[in-house]
Length: 175
Image (tube, rainbow, N blue to C red; front, top):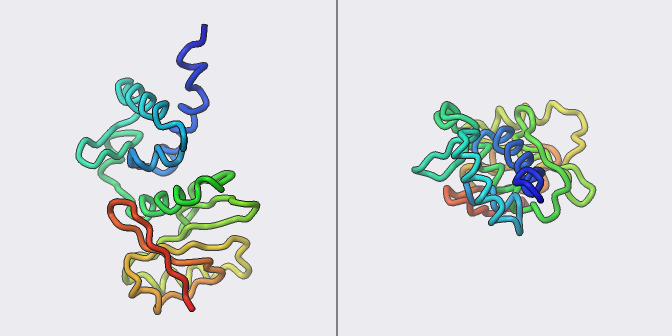
């Protein structure tokens, strides 16, 4: 007889890893990180929430590892996860990056970095990312507004995008 641990073990480990690593995940982001496993994820979220291993904010349906994390939302990381899930069918592995990179992932044998450039931080972020002599990764740059693109000079940028509050991603390419 299979136990819940046998059935959901790997998914539970992955789910807890992702919520811990990215600090906050919307319910829809979780379903998109695990395509085809929506029912399993829904059951795990309910179970882990009842066990108080994760915390759910009832207002915006985001999951956290603790109630204290709910107060420290990182808009850049939330946006970066929305971009990541757009590529999830091609992603081989993903993890949280170090400043100024939000997320690093491998897709189709290539390394990508997702970078968030807040409004009025364009020069700072351009300098921070230009400090690397030869970036190994292609960069996907998230901006708050397309109007920021003229002030950004980031090496190895594969593309630019903005993310709406509902998770819709709009991609741009400089010409």
